[in-house]
Length: 195
Image (cartoon, rainbow, N blue to C red):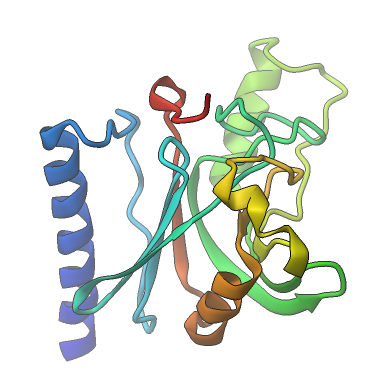
């Protein structure tokens, strides 16, 4: 019971922070509703803001850390299909931790999940993507290559839709984030800070 109250407090703090930051005008939050994620048994929450290129970590005490990140494309819209190099918006969770031979520490997300498939199906039905399109997979939070941390400092979006941190910072994040950690990816292309 005590743990559930702690997790509830994390969400209250996170959403209060979103409201405060949005009301101060420092960050414009997407008006799309974000479905709450079950955090049962997990002390962390990751929120990724595409419009400010930030990954924030919260624990039961509140805000814990902020890391700068980059994505796959300057177009920060929601992922539509395989090969578009866009990062998906929505609620996910970490399902695998591994060391990638190219860029080291990696946290694989459960994309595509049920809401991802539902959006994909709707877009096909509305003719927004080709009927032959595939949804794609393999979205992760991962490091840059050790000698390419400059990509994050330069807002150079180089991935195929993943979220990338500096190699040294990803080693830190990887060291304490457990499997099952909820990840919220908030997209809003209207305030992109890229030149």
